[in-house]
Image (cartoon, rainbow, N blue to C red; front, side, top):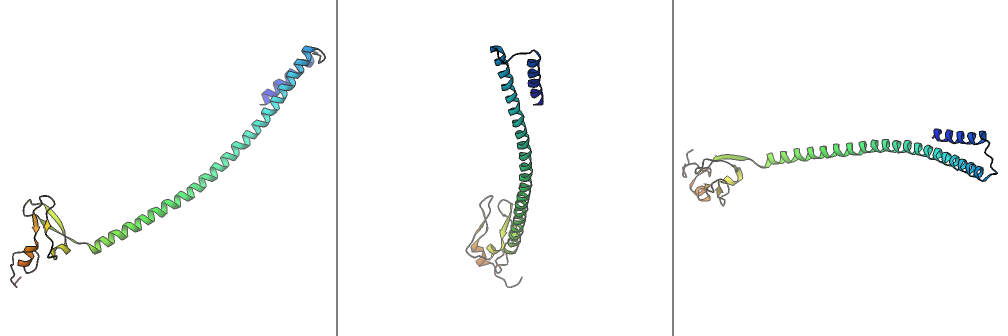
Length: 159
């Protein structure tokens, strides 16, 4: 903007050097145009200074905001990961304590099926193969067997 101020100063000097009189119609107009150009140049200089201050302020606010975001999101991410890890560990431990499975082969299709141990001792449940829908363990078989495991001991006391 200094360039604009220098140009207006040059025009003022040129008008004085050419001895343009402010009493003539043309002289009044030229002097007034130079005054308006000088006011515009001053206003633009002020606006440039305000703009530079705003840019500096916005950059400062942006840096502060970035610091705040880092703090907030870093804590949230850590908390989430910690909570998730704790939940996952607890659930995994609970599952291990509560559930145990026995792998059996379906006599019909040969598929290996995981069966909850508790079902082996439940007299009212038939265990069905998820693949072929054949009965793997029947509640009726449990009445015939001494141990309920599906073996062929048929009520003998000997094992």
